[in-house]
Length: 491
Image 1 (cartoon, rainbow, N blue to C red):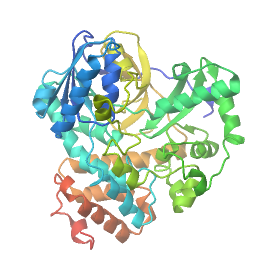
Image 2 (cartoon, rainbow, N blue to C red):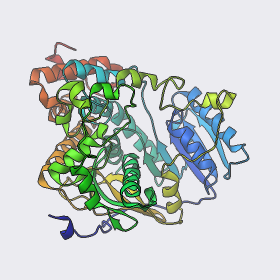
Image 3 (tube, helix red, strand yellow):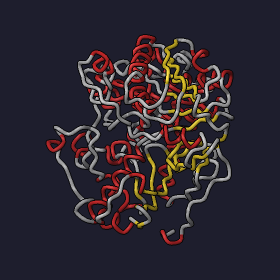
């Protein structure tokens, strides 16, 4: 259907709901409290917030959690900190969760033992994944490592803080958030991602450059829908001005038809994004992808065919295993925050907000100004044509004590088909994880469009080789009882 015939989005019939937060006394349990990126950002946002309370940092890496607790209390001692927060570290999950109002989930295994295999082993089979974090062979294995752990987290939340607001930042967001609900259906859990926020920043920049507007992210409203890292829009407004005619012009003009050589990207960050994949998909399907191209290509997989040169042609640079390995060491990483350098004075510290929206969400939940943002929640009708209960990403209205997803409509048939395949993969893995059935997980592996480029025997060997490389992180799965592994040479 054309844009003019679509109804404006309306609130879906069901919401994730709980008690309104007491902004003067908030208890936050941070699972993954040794985080090298999210915790330092959160500490600064909380210090500048309108809330007061306590943060309990739980991590199996006690030293990392203790370091972040030290950093949090150090920031609180600064004169420019306007809120009052106390940070403590604990290695006891029950202690962290007991009576918590808010639970934040942000964890990762050592990438040198996991993530690098997700990238390098599929590449040896001809699969040149761009990120390997949320779908494709690497994303599926990241899910298989993570889902059993998050089922235990959900069970612990049910026992120790059943009414808490739970925000999941851990990838793969759709797999993980779905697993939380699979374990504890009444959980108030929301998957969070900033890809849509960055895309809204880009639309604001287009409005500034081409329409002479003075816009920022807050002025941009879009009808966003899909699954995490494969979201789409079919409406876009900036301060009430319909942006679609401009987007159509850009897609068909010079802006949307650039090409690149590998040499052009040598010095570029893998996060640089000229949006050429998005424009190409818009020209073919009439709706616009609304996540970074480096993620989109792993769902619309024909852009991966042909290896580095073909991927670079679209301006997408692979996030390689060397980059991922360095992510574990703050001094070497472009992404990871080195709080030790701040604490020792080696690096000058300036307290500043991260630009993430969590504090806006918490403010609305506490009865402040209502807020609309993108979230990942089970599909209760907000996205037409995708399986009920599967985790989808749309806008939601956040108000006192509730997060209500907004109905976003459906998709052109070809786009729905692309999405449904990935939903089926996710649901099959989550189902297999309930009892650790590795052979059922292999069925999901075979569904993935990246894996479909292989003969069945090669897909089995790839699967088995990934299992062998990461077996110590897959002990919730029945490896010994697997027919697939028994038939493979690689295991």
